[in-house]
Structure formats: structure tokens, C-alpha cells
Length: 186
Image (cartoon, rainbow, N blue to C red):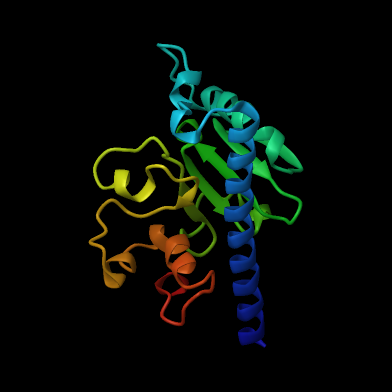
């Protein structure tokens, strides 16, 4: 019975990860078309005034401008200065750092629990189409929302497996399936 439950949970995770990835990137494409502004020209930090340190208000402005009308969600809320978005399938995501860092929760009812394990209960994504500093530039420039890759990744499978922050990327590279040697469920 435990194996059956574990396999069911893995299926929920992989199905919802793939759906989120597809949905968020489809929303970006639709927004680009409607606004006639390419994602590389989106400036999330432009939604903040010079002295604005309220990441939440900047993130909400960015979300409302570029994503809100292109994603189906059940509710949005502010939890401790972080924008949470809940989806009809029971998953959730929170957007931070002006909408550029995204944590996805396949089982959204647990989204408010900060102690959830990365790579098991929450998965990291990043949105840096105009580029970012260091190695992040090669991982995210000219792309949409992509599974997060740790800046210290050495380009090898072993290096990818060194951090559960890379969990969504590991699953993506395995055809949106959790590989038998997946390190983050242990």
C-alpha cells in the first residue's frame, strides 16, 4: 500500500509540474502577442518606484500587467509579503523577487507551510528572459519560465543531483517523470 500511495503522489507531482510549466509559458506567449512586447523587454523591477522596498507590491503589479489575464486561478493572496496564486487543480505557486523567482506547490493546500522540502513538496522556477548575472544568463536568457538551476551547477548529471533546488529541472530532463535515482525524496 505505501508503494501505491507513493506512486500516486509522484504522478500528481509530475502531472502538475508539467501542466504548470506549460500553462505559465503559454500565458507569457499570449501576453507577448496581446501587448506586442517581447518578454526580453519586460522589466519586472520597473514596477517599483525608486525607494520601493515592498517586493509584494512590485510583484503584484508585474503579475497584473503580464500574467493575470492569461492564467486561470481560483484566488490570489498576500502572505507575509509574498504573492500566492492558487489553481483549480489544487496546486499553487508563489511569486517573489518581482515575479522572477517562482516556487510551485503541486499540492497547494500545503503552500503556506514554509518548512516544506524543496524538490519534494515545492519546486523552484525562474523567469529571467532578459538575462541574469553569471551562469544564470546562459540558463534563462531569451526563455520563459524555466526550472531553476543552481548557479553552482557544473553541467553534469551528478552536479544537478547535488541540490534539491534543481528538482524541477531533473524531472523535466527526465521527460517530466521522477527518475529512480531522484535524490530529493529521501
